[in-house]
Length: 197
Image 1 (tube, rainbow, N blue to C red):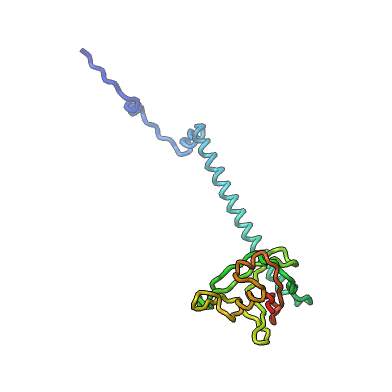
Image 2: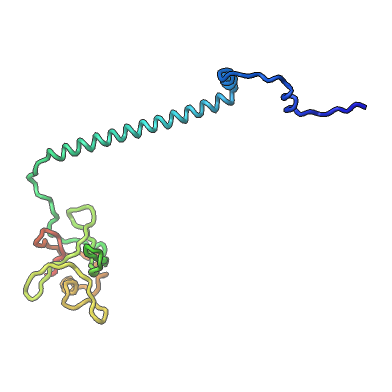
């Protein structure tokens, strides 16, 4: 009885005589393979894309550096103008919102709370914020920040700039200011403030 063994394809191939190929021969075989050509083409396209992006970014950097150089040169050649800054006039404003904002000093220590009044000025499209008041106290006109100070009972401190402003504007609470039209004045530094005298 004869016995036959099945051999695998790998075993069959291993029985074939080996041939040594040069690098050029192997590359030419690879280049004849459609899958290999596809992979190589994709890698080349990817590499080209990265090269293009690198060139674009290098070009952008050079352009930005050139613009900055020109702006610096232009800024060094600018003289003093003849027109003053246009500031808003003392006109009545509409109160859009009232808020309390914590104020800090240069060392970031809390110094108190200030009232910020967001208003619509007739000469400006965007809302403005006012945080100071020009008021009369003891027959003197004073300008002060609108500080939110409370007394021992938790009420707004009587005689404070905020209390005098509220009395002059005839409101009992700050929320009553919303939607009201109130007068403004110019302080000694040229800034707009609430007029309360």
